[in-house]
Image (cartoon, rainbow, N blue to C red):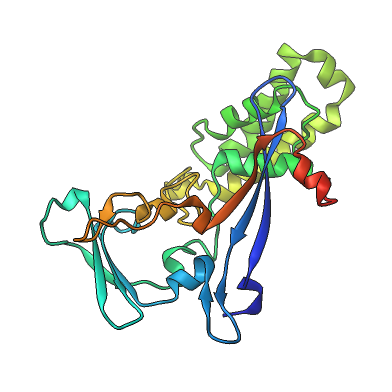
Length: 259
């Protein structure tokens, strides 16, 4: 495992509200990535999952996991069964866990509309200076378009029409920002939604994390228990420490010299 996956990682994530000012808040998380160090000691998220773990899943996207077996350090195994089984034997695909069970979108990360727009606003592709652009942007991104060409035409057109109708002063003062925002929304849509292939928001889940999709909670949901009654941990601190959650200009970032 590459050394960059050893240890801790600081994650800063911005979120823009659906108000007129697109109010920005940030969450700051320290991820305990861990892994295998030079002495072969295992720790953190990667370390815990580097051991021998098998599971049974019942759907093609491997979102529903009903049974997990972990091989312990002494060679024994512990089985964790979902409460949904109600004592029945697990039925489905049995699989040895590897990297792509979490990193399943390694080649093409399919973002949610919210995550993609938040990122575009942080990077300035869609300007937070435009009033209501987050709310209107999400509305336009999630609207139905019959094809990519249809989306390319309608998204900028409808964004411009919104400002022409509701905020003509903004369109008059910042036409370049409105034009760029329309292009930014088109870019978000065309890299995540493919109407001709019937691929839309959520068609291909991303199993990393647990905010937009079940992800970690496929197993760490408190519903997978062993015969002794112990469940797969739901302890948040096992994977990360939350330093700030949806705060405006978190103090911790200033203390770290980041903001």
